[in-house]
Structure formats: structure tokens, C-alpha cells
Image (tube, rainbow, N blue to C red; front, side, top):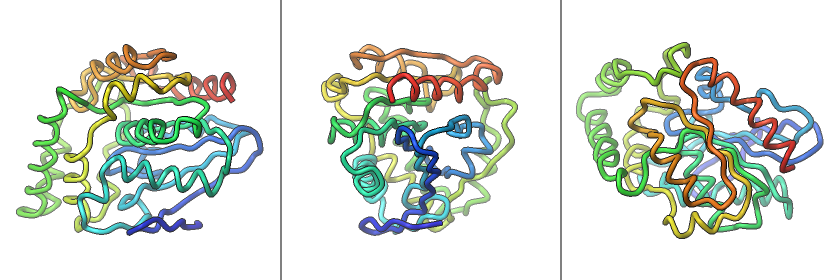
Length: 259
């Protein structure tokens, strides 16, 4: 796979060029292109007739990174994204799709460069704003646990956590990140939040927000808050694996409608 250089990292990049509208697909914290496929979050698998750009964020999957927490703040990841789009889709408006950290990255990028995106499909936005401080403390505690007791201790705790009902059919997975970098990724996430609500309200493009129930890290309340801020947004909520299985077709509809 080709790589793309950004300050402090080499990004592993994959472009599926079938012509048509440009689409960029992101993933979540500790995940990667490969892990998102295992977790049924690879919505791009249902697309055809597009130019689909997938990549592993810095420090994730096959991309490199430094053990520097500030490198993994969402505004930094947004800068990486915008550099990629300038290279692969210069002067074009792109449809963006991604879960959790990917949603945070897309929103920061859309605030920084409003003309870059034609539309967005945002999956399971992470807890934000008033509810973010508690999650940030959990991330810092996870980083400390890995450094003090090792990755196995973190995995033993994490794999025993309850799953959202929509994901009960997905296989067990582990972070697609090295043990050396994982604490820095968690501390970078602890330093991150969605853009200021007033800035989000200025994202004047069509947005679909996809959420699922019973996930404290990705509460429906964040999705509903985004719905109240974004001028052209719609919300779909998954309660079961069958609902989750419909998400690739929703992405197809979004790209066809707004591409």
C-alpha cells in the first residue's frame, strides 16, 4: 500500500478508484481499516462507482506515529485528513464518513475548511462537551494501566465490558495499535473534544448521524445534540444488529444523493 507523509507519521493509504464522486472513510480510536471491517463498521464495502480513499490514522494499523499525546488530538488528525484530500482530491468537494474519532476528525476538518466537503455520514459520535471530562479521565486511567500493568491487563478489563445491543454479533477484537503507542493515543483522546457547538452549527452541508443505543462512550445524547446544531442533519438509531446492517446502504444513499 502507498504511504503519505504528515508531520511525525507515515499514513498507510488505500484508494479504490472506480470513478465517480470522491469519498473518504475514517475509523475510530484504536481501530484501523482492517479492524473496522471485523466490527461491521466498514460502510464503504457497499459503495461502487466512487473514488474511495481509506487510510489508517497516525499511530493506528499500518500507519506510524510517535509516542507524543498531542499528535493524536482530533484537530491534528483533521490536519492530516485535509492534507490527504488536497493530495488525492485537489479542489474537489468530498463526502466524508467515519465513526467516533473519525467523526471528531471530520467535524474539525469541516470547521477548518467548510468548502472541502459535500456531505458527511457520522457514525456513533463520541461523548462530547459537558460529558467529555469523565471520558477523558477514563482514557488517562487506561493509559496509566497499560504503562503500569501492561496491555494484557487493559484487554482483560476492556473485553469484559458490556456491548451495545447492535454490536452483539460482531467478533471480539483488540486494538490495532502497538502497546508502545497506545497510552499516547488514549492521552491524545483525553485532550480532544468535538468543535465548539457554535462552530458546528456553521457546518452548512447535509449530514446523516448514525447512532446506537446503550453505549456510554457513544451516547445517543451526543447524536441528538449534533442534530440540534447542524442545519441540515438527519438521525438514524440502531437498536439491533439488523439495524446496523442497514448502515452501508444509508451511506450509499448519502453519496448518491449529495455526490
